[in-house]
Amino acid sequence: MWSYPNIDPVALDLGFLQIHWYGLMYLIAFAGGWFYGVYRARNIEPWNSEMVGDLLFYVAMGVILGGRIGYILFYDLSHYLEQPLDVFKVWQGGMSFHGGLLGVTVAMLLFARKTQQSLFQVADFVAPLIPIGLLTGRIGNFINGELWGKTTDSSLGMWVYDPMIQQTIQKYPTQLLEALLEGVVLFILLAWYGRKPRAPGAIAGMFLIGYGVFRFLVEFWRVPDAQLGYLLWNWLTMGQLLSLPMVLIGLLLVLYKNKGNRI
Image (cartoon, rainbow, N blue to C red; front, side, top):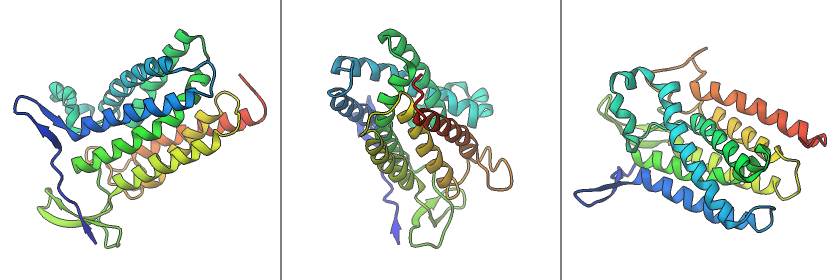
């Protein structure tokens, strides 16, 4: 059995400025996305390193604004209506992947218009980069000591202090499980699927399927947000509900594209 190391969420304290690990994870994600994007651009027309840099600026805005707004709307609107200044405390967590995905979709649409590409072309280029951000983001959740799973006696459990009951108990480290599935496994899946030429939209569709399925499964071990709880049947969470449309849209894209349709 292993224990949570109680990592200080502040990576560097300069007195007048505190640099949080959570923010550093975002910087690492965008840096990793840029390097991998430049690598991919070598073999994909009309992409080049300058376009990758421009794209990541659009994506960064989409992730930050969409992720924050999505969390507020989907998960804890009442709190932010009472404490509106908490909207800006992003170092405390509170980012929604599904909201971030909507924000990134808008960003990709704007970038597609700017570069005279289709949305599907841009989405296929972006999709394999996203698992890098998911990996670092979940590590950031782990460092922050948030999004723990359910209590367990399993050897996979981790000893962690629960301030609600003021005891050290065993919980599933679902942040690390998501980092593995949504980060590492999904990255490998998309790299494998993208080896062959695909119709525009197929790679993006595979990303939606992969993420949606992995997130839906992990939610069975995660604890739902306290302010929401389970939505239905004492097991359906908001994360699962938001993942279902992703899987459906992804399946439609992959199946439709594999029939030779190239819109």
